Image (cartoon, rainbow, N blue to C red; front, side, top):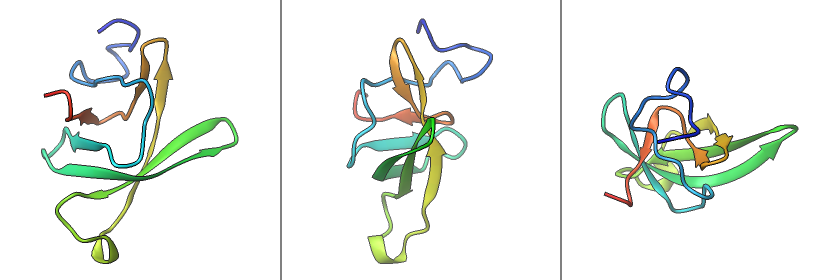
Length: 85
């Protein structure tokens, strides 16, 4: 994939046009699926809040991930977008 620097992100990282609520991303480290529950901006950065997809919302721990952006689109470093597989 062009645009995303190989030294910054794993080769499997997939860029999408935008990060949206309800998207499912797989954590590269352990293969667990995460559901995007919130996307927000803080000063000059965008973040996605995600929870494990297998756990019901009230009981789920959340993870905050900084969105990586470039000319190819957006990506979540350490996660792979699953809905194109």
